[in-house]
Image 1 (tube, rainbow over the protein chains, first blue to last red):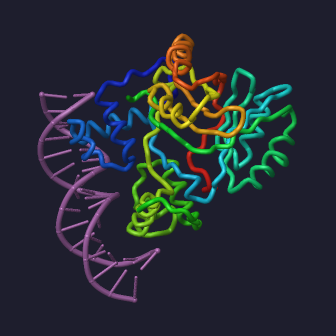
Image 2: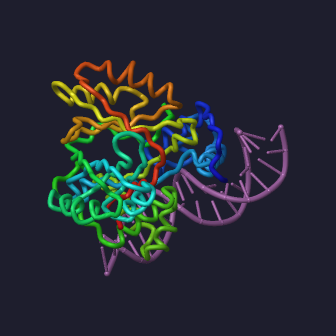
Image 3: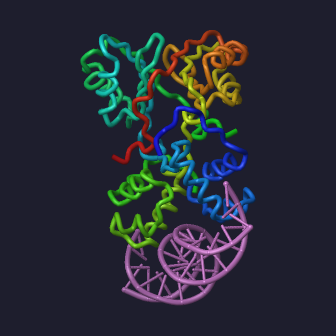
Length: 155
Length: 155
DNA sequence: AGTGAAACGACCGTAGA
DNA sequence: TCTACGGTCGTTTCACT
């Protein structure tokens, strides 16, 4: 199913299902059914529709810290020319896990994941600032992640 | 299992398993086993360990756009006093889905999700700027999300 | 949109290399 | 850490509401 233009309104049952899958994406349909008061088949149908409509997906999420990537940062980028082309280049860098075009004093925000400070310096100097059209960057090194939600709009 | 201090090194098989679960978090252990060349039980054991060690989790992720939240923004916050206390307050706001303490010209970066511009203005004026210790904010409205990765360190 | 039932397949514990 | 296997439980399909 293609993404829609109109918002999809979730009823309380679908929100409850998403909440169950937020706690554990591998929880069985039967178990979710018990929790939300629906049969297993009904839960399965709703989950399928939520996925097909693009409202929700169930995915594996990894923790960079646990994998030895101790430095994360948000890099604000000011661009000359077409920011989409710069965004494309940024996205091709493996250490860049998040790229968004913005309005404001930065044209692009890019989140980066590195093992240590040396890698971050290398990434900024040798990769990011060398991209054609990157005018200036400003780096915000992460000190502590305080909140991270994956399920917007379900609370 | 408690989070570790030392990085966990993933072998190619575990990376392949995470990649499978990245494509579809509900894929069966048996199917993953076929794809990565392992028995169903072995896949199950590895997934369990990856989850218990905190390296990986399988979760539901929702798309704000599909739910009618058409405005997202990153808000850079400058703080007087203890940034942890401000971060705590920010995190209590439902529209705030991401809060990180940073070093740089902002003390905190907070991502917000709103239905429209009016809600964003309301959020900034009535909620965020009213928090004790918030000295100034700078808002970067999202124009286009270009890249979003959930599985750092597995490629 | 939802339920229920039967066949099938996945999951889980345990044993053994 | 892996495979093998049997019991249990979850999933799938389909007929029905």
